[in-house]
Image 1 (cartoon, rainbow, N blue to C red):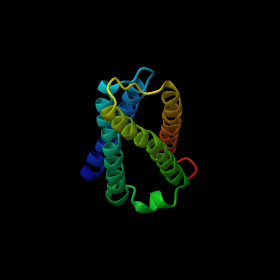
Image 2 (image 1 turned 120 degrees about the vertical axis):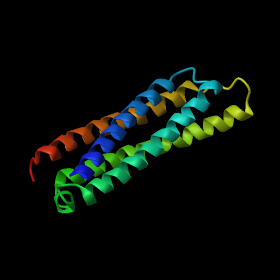
Image 3 (image 1 turned 180 degrees about the horizontal axis):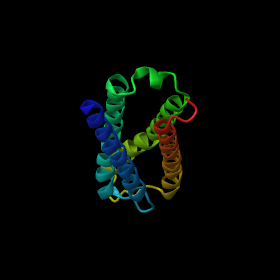
Length: 150
């Protein structure tokens, strides 16, 4: 029981921290994004990826060592819907990460570099998609916690 509690607490902390990091990215990626903020943005994006990996590892631990047992998860539609939403968030992070890396390269080669506003607008669309999918994760987590439709 203690293992399950520790894993649940760690999982929740990591997920809420991931939401906070996503909010920070949303704030940083705005018109006027310049060279000075790109290093911070790259670090925030790196933290976002690291947290996502940590959440996956803790989640696997919860499935394998949690009180409900792995059978509860693998046969439950809400679990797979939650995993699909998490995967969608992950896929939606790829274009922003690639663009952030490209912007850093361009900023290193160009003094006074400012990210074009058209690119900012396009990237914010991916962030909005992540927020929507993240909300779905919470919906499916609540569904799972109550055993709805199991």
